[in-house]
Length: 388
Image (cartoon, rainbow, N blue to C red; front, side):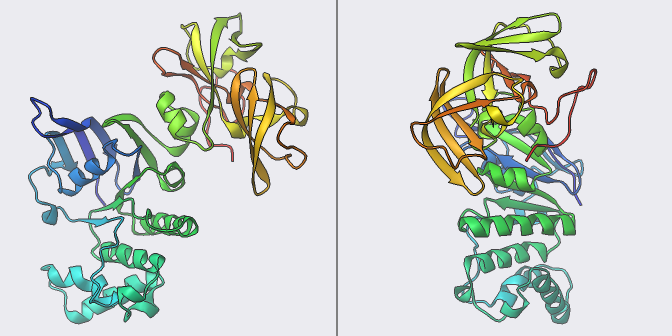
């Protein structure tokens, strides 16, 4: 296993002193041995450029890439002992599955006999449950089978690092879910440090040990899936992570003896100070409600603000529905369970527990209060897990 470090890494395309494009800006990340890091962000945020610098396909303009404390900036890609899996499966069409799997071993100076290579090919094929396909050509394979072969070609080398560049983008939704579970299981089984690029926040929350969220080449937050969901560093992270999108409203805050009073248009409520880690020193805030945290008012005690919404659209998703409505605060989205009697034009009343409310500084957009799974006890300052 390998510890991966990015130390103030910057990448500028073009002349850095003139009109060069800054793709990655002063990025520092430390990935412990065996961890699964996901680089997450919108298109153009610098995540693939970061992965290519780790793999040696791009040279940093400034900063250092380190493997186990050793700077590898000047080491060529073929000598870094990393294995990359791309969005394009990149299989050799004239070779069988077995030949594709063993190709890297036959090219490298590893002193392995043909018999040893065949044994290793068989082991990896069995691990990926494609042993019956070893004599097939890529044209005879489904998309999922091709992706398994591409994974096997990376695994068989037992590299220092796995690098994944949106490997599931070309698969259908059902197969993506299956394959991301298999990738997570395989990475845990082989224990090789991995970096995985995606713009899909569901993938990131599912498979990552830690998530690095990038925007315009800058690191916005590095944390566990629970941390970036419950305690996002800023408004960008809060809006990018989580589906459906967070409801966001303007508000003001004032201090009481043991609570903060939040006032929005035609509604106000209090948040006990024990639910907030630090003092709130601003007056203007942005108040965030995640749709899955809103509950129908009659279903639980009304200890938070009530919001009455005129229903516009109901989108059933199995046993729940995403309801879009218009309220005195503006557009509101709620994910509710008791939806069968709700239709367009009806009125829906929803509320939210104070511990689930997010608060952001209206000027800096930095987090002031995150989401708690359960209400904090007096003196407690953190919580674990994320509510399903």
